[in-house]
Image: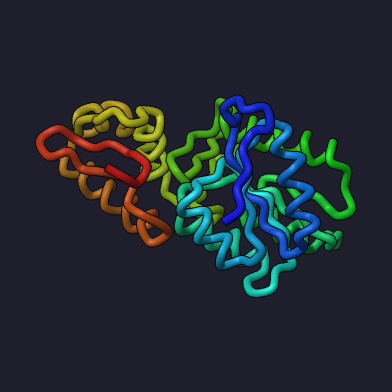
Length: 237
C-alpha cells in the first residue's frame, strides 16, 4: 500500500486517494500533492480503490475513468452507496460532453481532462475540498445525504429522492438540528401547521416514510432515542 505524507513534516491538510492505472501518473500526482501538504495514497484498479477508501477515509478521490477492472463511473457509484459521501474529481482522457455529464450526474464534484497542468489540478483540488468543507447556506448535509434548499432537491449518494412536502420539511428540520435530539412536540411545532389537531403519532408515521426512502440507499441515518425523540447522524456509534 503506497502512501505519502506532507513533504515538510507538517500535519497534512487533507487525505487524498489517487486512482489511476498508469504508474507514472500516480507517482507524479502523489509527489505534487505531497508538496501541497496532502497525505496521499494511490490505487491502480477500481476494486482496490473501493477497499482503500474504506480504510483510508480520504477527504477527496482523484479518480481516472479508464481503469482495468471497474471503470471510474462504477467506482464512484459504489463509493456513494457504501461510504459517507467522498468528493470525487474525475481525471480522464475522455473529453466527450456525454461522459462529463454522466460523471457529474453520478455526483462528481469536478471533471479534469488529460493532459492537464499540475497547477490546474492543484487549484481544482483546493476548490473541491473547500466546497466540501463549507457547503452553501442552502445546502444541508449528513454523510452522503444532501438537501439543497435552493433547488428543493434531496439526494443520497447522488441519487435523487422524491419527497412529499411534509417529508421534505421533516427532513430539513432534522438536518438543521444536526446531532440534536428533537421531540415529537418540537417536530409538530416546526413541521406541521399551527392548526393541526391530530395525534403526535403522525410524526412516527412520517419518520417511517422517510426511512423507507433513505435507508435502501445506505446505512440508516435517522435514529430513535427512546422516550426523547429523533435525531439524524452519520453512521457509526
